[in-house]
Length: 609
Image 1 (cartoon, rainbow, N blue to C red):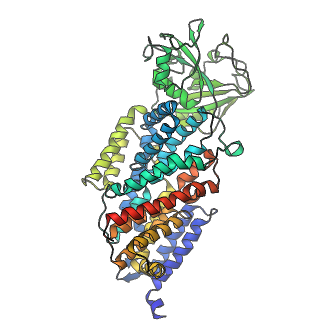
Image 2: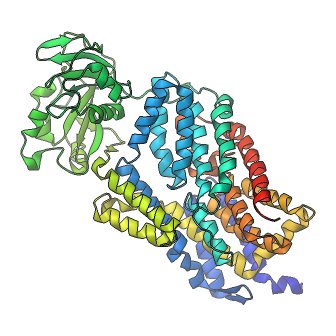
Image 3: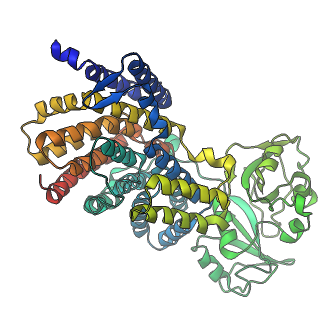
């Protein structure tokens, strides 16, 4: 009883931690709500019953201090930097490079995809990497007549493994390093454990390349991915086109040999699409593909998906493409539409609506023959692919007879891509060489992106996940409460009572197993909040160095491969990949075991345990 009274705060925090974990596992309770509950209950509890002991003082202000914590500033800033790489299209050259390799050899392309995903995720938040690579994987699979199920999960897992390699790879890494530093552990540099991750990452790469695709099935039907719409379009070759005076075969090679030309319009003539045909200014290439690839062809060969002479003749303030921000949207023609029964060139669409029609899709109607132009009469159900400023796209929704589909696509500001890459590289280098802490360098980087126009203030919030912010603050509060009240020491005592007979190497493996199980059912940041103080307490009890146990916590909390709820990117790929729960167990389970064995060996060799 005296022990219970002496450690009343610790036992109360441990009991509340168990309740919090239970709430995190309930799908019906949103994670942000659970995080708010944790913050509120801890703040109220320590306001009514303040704690002061050997581990420090805990009051309500300390619980709220997470909102201004250096780790949260770094995490939010890095998320914004990752969004800047997306909105500027900085990663699109990588996507085009992967597509060219795919055209040469699919197995080599998968290896290149996995390796690229691992490298990128060491410096960019995992979610933007998956968001950028996912449409590339889906597009490549569809072109091969396959579903992306055998590629998406390996790509996603490669991103998670690569995120372990640096302190900025994931928000969980930053959180663990911050909790460890606040608990008295020595500071950890950005690349301090990169060399230790390299060996296990190579094993994971081989597993994901050679084994994982064979464990996954081709999903079709309701679980498959619906084929993307193939729009018909004309690529207009103007005076600035790169392919004037070059052959059609050369033009196709600049698109990674993906572009298929139905025929070539030259004046009133229709020319066969022979690779030896020399292209000239004024030619129009008849192509069919998805909206993403049509825009890629436009950039690759320096063409336009619209008649530049007609559109450029509009006054500057009414030119649809002069605005810096551009969106793509799909518009359905209805029976009440003034376009019904008319051709596009008769409608003055760009002048009247402030958007440009790039391509058309005629569901259920025969393809036009060689003698019929692409500008067909429009009927009910026909789709128009349009581009214009967001305000004009929004205005289209209120036009009579126009049905704008949900899911408009923002076009990247590609001219800003080099600036975004330079800023990201500078942020990483300043932190890596110890010139500035990562929170400060990333925060200044965000200011530079805003000043240079890579990002706009109104879009700043889109780069920050409210869920991540609240989970990080709740995790910091929970971690502080456990450490200061001695709850972490009590949990370490309980852990050692079970695993006390193990060697130091076995103890490290047990820590990773415990956190690996935990992170697959609750938020990995929540697992870090409990796992990091406990891991440090265990290291202190057995007299081992703290660094290997910090890395064991990072590894364990990132082993979120075995369940779809283990990590947010697992949820992202679940629907397009057509995955079910057992797919994650079948592929992710062996990967969890492989990583635990590999990291136990590496840490045992690298540190005197």
